Length: 196
Image (cartoon, rainbow, N blue to C red; front, side, top):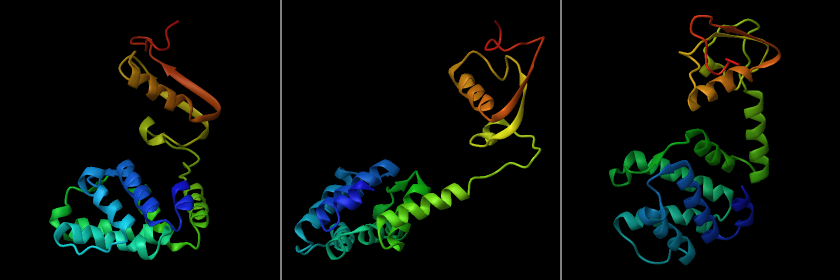
């Protein structure tokens, strides 16, 4: 977000921000793969005659040269998504954080990046799932939810062994309750996390 605001009007700065962002949300558009060429094209104004992959990278950089703001960045990201589908030479580009990638693309729909971030944040906040009044769930599915009262069962050595991942799971289970928490402990096979 800061790079979009501070880099507005500077195609080279925005190109560097795009390469950095793509490195955070996926693989295959790194500085050594396509990023350096992309940044160079944006910095030099896409003036050189190119062919092959370099011509394709240049066509992406033109979005920033012609529109050096969040609208241009959104067009670059959308172009990369379409490019991956239609050109096998760019098949190594993968996005791991799909939600973040597409939210960055959607920023181009707004007048300012700040307005876009505010709207996306508002949508995220209002789309948080709320559990029904009474629900039975596994701990993994309850992550991120809160309820007034929670019963955690079975709290035995099989589910909550003395291991780091079991401790994390226990934290998730315990932190779902807002007012009341009940633990159903096993007498035969107690969890070592509860034994005093």
